[in-house]
Image 1 (tube, rainbow, N blue to C red):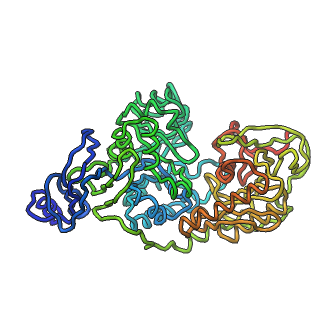
Image 2: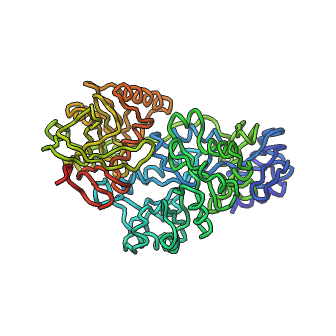
Image 3: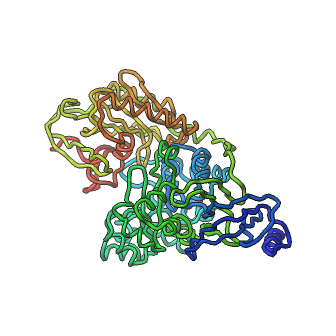
Length: 558
């Protein structure tokens, strides 16, 4: 009550504001106009727009004031950084809020993994609004570290800062009436929460059926026709512009419409290097403007549009809204002069959170010996073929009697790491081009078991065993360990500073190139080779998976 009275008194001019941003050129993303005025801040809220005095004042003459940017769909773990370190990079660039699907850590540590991330987020100026992962595990064809069922969803939706059900990836389950999938949607809707979607290339009656359940968004559109069909049916269309998955150009006419049901998002697809050198959602905004999108329309897609969709009290410079204000020297280039987040001027963001030990001891795999990764027999084999720049794979069939680097036939293994089962899935793969050595990592969507590709059984074992010693990470071996990055937070994130992570990743990519790999993003490519819900052939700890048939198949064709 006292806080509200104080806010009213500041708005009336009867009391000095805690902070006043003076003489700013305010970009009003609601009315699409520029208004020169003061912004009065009381606590973490905006009290008024007009002419005010403050205990602390910022002279913003000659600067644009825009709302803090809001990423409507991301996976923070994919940055390989802690939330604190992620915030240190992105908040000073004007990114003040994100909507996060903690799908990756949930597949490793379940509910407690989500809880830990929520607790860390509270210690940073970055506002993180969480959604409950809807597909943990993503498939019965792999061993995951956890299961989140409809009862778990109901409970987690009551936790602080949890605002919805995250992308419902199992769209066949939705349209075929799968009971467990529908239960999760029903419980989220009954609590008045948002339900996000994920339905690439879904069209026509199937799309109608999917939307009829109350699913409200999609971030997987690949062309303008698909995006427009989804908009016409009332879906929010999230236009993804990441480091690898870049949909802005293919959806440019949709972006230029300036439709209030469109958003710019990253989907967690920003490399550490890009975060440091190019930025985060501010980069997406600049790209949109470079492609000819009106700056205010681009701002709407990063501010008021996600705010209104998710019910976030930000995204607009107006009384009662959270005081997230970014002062810009140049609007089109989003050149940041100063950032106010939650009513406070953003300075150096310091680490104030320590991860509990159970988060750092998530790799329970058994050490490998060469006989563990041997593929018995020879004959016509099903070979996974990597497609450059895609997470889908193709199937090839050739006579194989072992690793053959001259034909680019390598071995890929997936080692179960959550429960110590000793499961090792094995298959042959083409496309990495290694002439020697091996690459192993604990980033392996979605179950995040240890995945390794190599040109010899000995190097495969060395790489996997070193990953186990590190309690998660990325390792490159060529007779001996040549480069590594420890990711001991659930096998996904590093405790080190972003600049150190970038340096180690650069070394890893350099060593991978020395082994003969020509792929542009080998770590990303390898991370998706164990995802058994994306066609055509993948491998999990249970074996080689034919995704179309949705079953484990033999390496050799009978």
